[in-house]
Image (cartoon, rainbow, N blue to C red):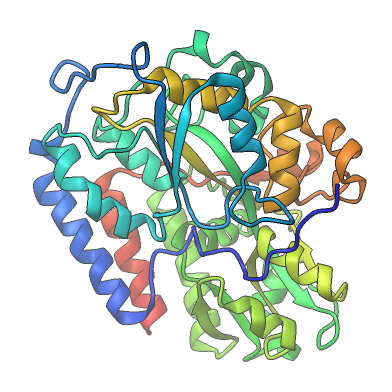
Length: 396
């Protein structure tokens, strides 16, 4: 099987902001959360969900665009999903209607806050938003007995996360790394965060990510701190490091994944980058390299959730478990080119796309996994404080 190259870069699932307007929108959302969510919190007792899977063979699945395999000869067909439907007899309505975490959260918030259905059985949200949804009590608990493949095959680095210690609310769909990238056509090799933020030959030719968790996380690790467990003082130290690089002119700007074409052209020499983007750029120009710094890379995931009042939880669990079959996971990963969260998929990838089976940005080895960290789960107060401070540096 030949992998199908995607004509467009992946959408910025990690991106929260777009300039000053985006910053204002985020802070306004934070204020609403701080003032209004306590009354909107739910529990399994306050918001009871009824499962109709026994009588209705259907499922509604909302995902991001270009995040599911399609047939090479017919872009309207989705081979792995079609195979699930044929095997299970469950009719899946699949929609690509999630384009931004905050935007989608704003769309579904009124219903979930009022314990009303949103018309979807599975939604895929980035880890930090999944944590928020779980904290609000807006997500149904899964039955481990119905997802045995997840129990067996979920990567160790994605187990027992701070916002889902028992792996029963959020099941990773795909994952990625935030690290460094450089274009060898216009720059010497860049190996460390400190190099990127201080090296004179890179001055004014560097971008960093507008996703606070990735940019600050990389700097925290470079400063010798643990991004998954840090103090307010350590956050401020990382922020000060970032501010010095901004004030000195080292950093050209903050970006979503719109850095990708600039890096490809050599307009920027190096940047903080996401692994999925760089895989695609490197396929066109091998001089573009992704670097997971020895100090540590940032690991993120996009997670499958079953929202409150979804009426087909058992079918959702069946689909989740299906995508944790190694052969199915390999077929999906061969198309989307993100980190596969499923153990055993690498061996299956050898059979269908051997050129991808040894790609560490799809199947990280144990050493890379060991030095890849997820950002610490934040309280609402921390979220507002840290984002506000980050925005001040970003806008400065």
